Length: 113
Length: 115
Image 1 (cartoon, chains in turn red, cyan):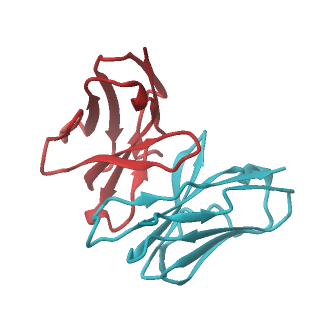
Image 2 (tube, each protein chain N blue to C red):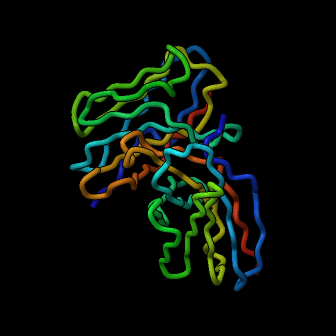
């Protein structure tokens, strides 16, 4: 039973447009959410995070939105660039992260020129 | 500053052989995690340590899997005997609750192929 779900295995977006990656979770104990980015043959790298006390966090071209009532979060990338092509993992933690992170299966974002 | 270091990067082994994956966490980090990535299941947490002590190994798939952390700078994940279904990318990750909070830092992974 997956507690963190990324229902889109892949997403194709034109360069310069907005990329929106979605993530749903089922565990109401999750209180911290993160997005990781992964290039082929590399480990995942931290991108951006958000605490459950907030509904938005922005860092440059990247913004994460959290809708606790819907148990949904999304990552917006504006504008999308070719270097953004990667697999994006949504992750969540409970109890202040003491139990580690639970990851979704990832969404492969492809930025087309 | 060195990140999480894993070895070997690639391993091809025959079914039934013992496999040992190694990890050196980031210096000063007090948590160490072993994850496995497969197409079917994504990134799964296998086991994690806090201050060298195993806290939760509920993700370890079978008794064939074992992990140790003899000191703060070294951990191993052992599979014995290995099976073809163990083929995956195994990631080690570490974290400092004080410095990095919920953010964990991954190594580049060990690509295991069991034939």
